[in-house]
Image (cartoon, rainbow, N blue to C red; front, side):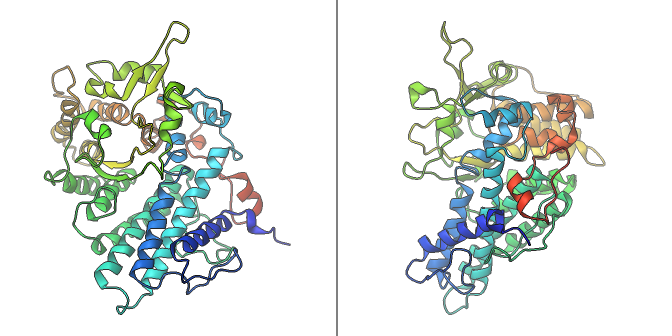
Length: 457
């Protein structure tokens, strides 16, 4: 007999979707039992469609996704952040000893698939609404935002776990996707691009740094095309954002994270004192109400404080050392004791570095253009050396890698940059390339005969 799938991730998704529908639309919903959701329930008009969409954003910013765990796993794996606390399952990311029963790996898998399903439900339900209850422009906007959230979720699953099931319909029962097998990482990325291209014409050209618009989609397309080594498209989409100087600019480095929704941000998730981002709790010292579960490594601390490397980016770190507690470093990207730090997903600085890499690696390299983009980032950081000039192609590519490291040490970048460029062995010593993706959670492998564990786990 087939194992009951109530432990399987699709069931987790169903429960999450059910909860969304309950709190979003409690005046029109009658759910029973929890394992299923009526296919015609919940989303009936503009108000309920917007409520469902808000639920998808809420999943995106949850503690287990961009609110902490997903981002933490990646910056810990990149080794510029060191585990310094009491929760041992974080140590595994520093030394790359993670296994399929790791708590954080389980939570991020479930959190991302839950977010994916929320987006699918929004697309399914809103698409079915008639023009009598919702205008075409509002319908398109909601569906477009949901396509972006689905694309981002699939992208994060693909780059984190490799071959994963692609789910493009809302989960209604725990058995809806029996028989769905994993797709290759390449096919996952292809679906991401398809979803983003679908979203693009549906969205407005307005600027909203906390909600998805056309430029949010273009910025993610630039990143995905970089991962798929489509240098021409990566340069094209990054250039569209960089050219919009009225809305997106490199701002003084410390200003972008000491304020909210600056011109540095393309897309950041909004938190409040009642709906908190818990990154700061895990970064801050106990004197400031934190747990200090992780800290900047000594190496990145020194790099950031080197005027010829970090420049003004030294604002990212503080030295709180004492005679009895030497080398006690604290990261400052998430610093608000009130818990309302934004979560940064897309920044203009990344678009410069995407374009720089694409220019350096395309069939006919544009090294002068790549160096100009590098210098834009370095000059914004007020690096205390002359601008870069006359570098070879290999030197430019290495300089871009290093600049990404210094620009985004506490965001979800370095580990992915080193794995996608196949440099994790050389730089981090993770010579087993099968460890460049995380294992699929043990419980899911046991419960679902359609899932195949990643090699080496």
